[in-house]
Length: 148
Picture 1 (cartoon, helix red, strand yellow):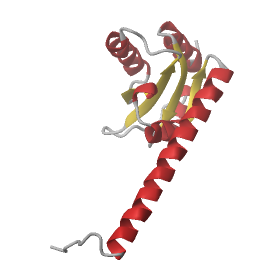
Picture 2 (tube, helix red, strand yellow):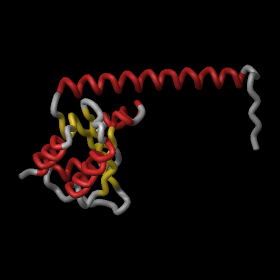
Picture 3 (cartoon, rainbow, N blue to C red):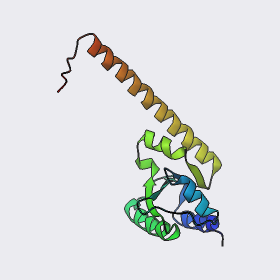
Picture 4 (cartoon, rainbow, N blue to C red):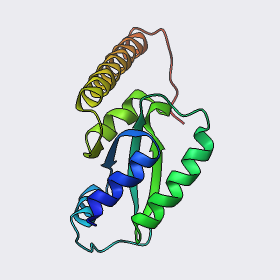
């Protein structure tokens, strides 16, 4: 059985709707799924983000079992598993810039990505607005900053 098929079977078993490989080892992880044996640095881990339709009630148990199965599957990589619905919008944005390695329902994934992009965009806008206001307040003398 091909690696991609094996990964699909693992993710389906746990009710995952979609999964990404992202981060610094994305290319090596994709090469691994295609059957290659990439060089893996000892300190490198493979970032894997999964999405559920609804977070499982026994999420801690599912996390442990899925982590164990993915760790065995992706050996020699270390695995960093993330339930994306439990992370902030900017982290989710970084994950969706990665590669989709599993998708059970294309329309579900599109809706998730659209929501994540909108939330990240809103947060980024608010952060930029705050920084602009803060710097203007410093410039206008509302705050004094001492250099130590």
